[in-house]
Image 1 (cartoon, rainbow, N blue to C red):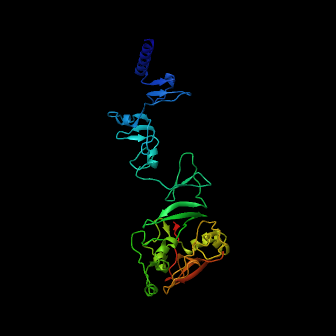
Image 2: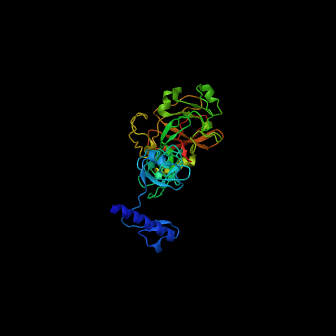
Image 3: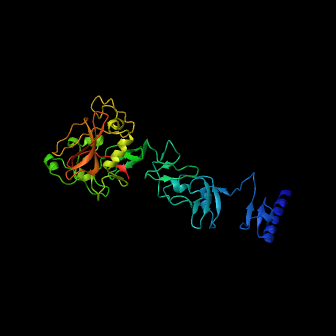
Length: 351
């Protein structure tokens, strides 16, 4: 009985204080209440505790007022445990957490739309910055923004056919770490598959083939494309945001790895599963993983698997020839110009 009377007196005191001053303070002298606040709580040892309830109880509140605040005690991926406020239309997570990871609905004033889902992020070994699939950065409180990593695998890359590729950071560039396998440009236009040797030798338009016209080699080595396919400017053969490297961009990579005389050993796959024996000079320390996928020559004939690997640049040398980079059973990463009718492997570089 005594406690009930005390509670009534306390409420009455707050009511009359509010009526007299139009402001109420708990732990705050009347003259120190902030002029913008109707109600202010001050403490250095205790916090403010809003109503705690489950999501079901929160959703059962009838006609909630805009600005109503509760703490939800249960949660899932799209409605995590935490503070929620009613914005006049829907309940929103006060930290925007659902938007950053969710897949249904926008949540939080500072959050991302729940329909935008960030996946496949990578944490650099030299910084705390998160690198997202699209190559952009996101700054999270307490996380510092720094330069991209200069080594190590990056997020997976997917082409228009659904093929997934490893990617790798080398210096200031990000490369595919596997050979291209796509059968159409990133706008959906089909790249013709030409198998007959005579037809291939007569081409002045885009085409691809697999080594020895054997489709099982597509999984192992990817496709061989003539230069007319890789040089297309209106139909990019690489996934959106990526491109066939220029001769100058190949130079940047090779020079970063020590130059033509040694870069090859750092870029070639180790072992003899895709290179002729002994291949004991290869370290693949860059993780580029160049394969000996040979070539299809301008007459339509194929080179031997295991002997060499050849990769197009998008740079034309003259009317009939263009630049390529080649690897063989040495430490060299060489450069040559060959007929645009050759069919070579392709690695894409991020824009």
